[in-house]
Length: 176
Image 1 (tube, rainbow, N blue to C red):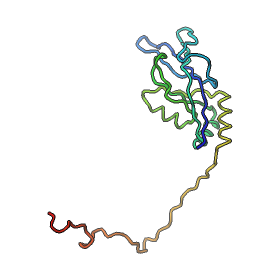
Image 2: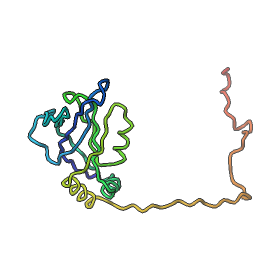
Image 3: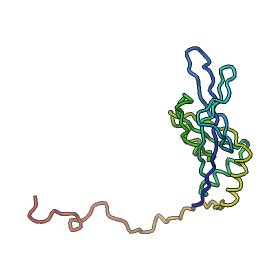
Image 4: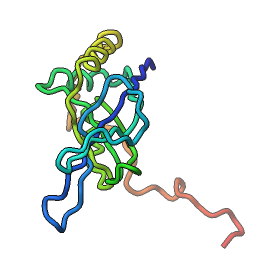
């Protein structure tokens, strides 16, 4: 199965809590089409308590079998990249997954331990994804199966509900 690997950088924002009882939240905010020359888990900006972190590089694998899902994403009004991360501390948070498959991203949303965000897809990633889909997409037409009509009056061969004694399973002679 043909595939292509894209190396991306991930940014996340950590916002201060809304109330004094809350905790700061770390949420994915952007995907970079080029991996920057920064160390993972680097603080980029801190404006009024809102911090922007570079979490690190990640690989996103495009599979040719998922091209119809990629087309759904590209044809939507807002093409997105789904980023799932685990942990709320930027020093220990790990990237669980990066995908452009909307159905895989939706599947990660059910994980209670992961924070999943659909971030806007940069133009460079959109162009690479569109080129991959153009190269590998095979349109499979939908064929609805039709039921075969059955004749209720026709005699059909079927097993009897109760087997005659000669067809029943018996214990070999001498065993109890």
